[in-house]
Image (cartoon, rainbow, N blue to C red; front, side, top):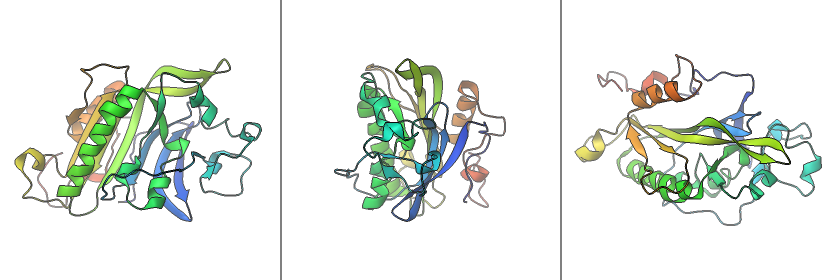
Length: 261
């Protein structure tokens, strides 16, 4: 309903309309001090889960003082002298961060068109994830959600994926540069779904959520699936959200529905 999550307010947070190739692709709420997205909100597109090839990582001109465009751009050579890094992460922040890799909040596997996939390759859509969590835990869950929405969501599905931080930072040249998330969380909303879906899937509609702990290799580390209401309560306990915090308008309850999500 063209409304971002509410209850996340701070002077360091900036909305970014993620624009690529003359079109707005999705929305990111970005922390210009911690140099990470707080969340990315996007429309899910049915796909086979293919990955892009040869897409360069991009930066956000909307956060740079040296720009005459509002579209994400590939990092140019010599960018370190162009004031990019004041308000956003840059490639060098991740180059020597051996414990972490770049994990996208809006993943390309949840997009279908090549340009929509390419638009996920901006560092303003990226947070540091441990390789084990990113590749074994979170990517697996992204695939589960992709298949679930492919199969049982008839209409449009909306997804918000965000983080909580712990105070841990990636440092570069003796400066705190990028906040490391403690938890990654995600929620989807699909009002128009298949009511004949198997009961094991049907209760996860019209909305459901999950979160995971962004830790080093731990074979017991798995994603926890919960209702959107339970996720809201979890986030109120673990991060700085206001009491009126809400992910979806009306908590993704369809008009006339008695279902209390």
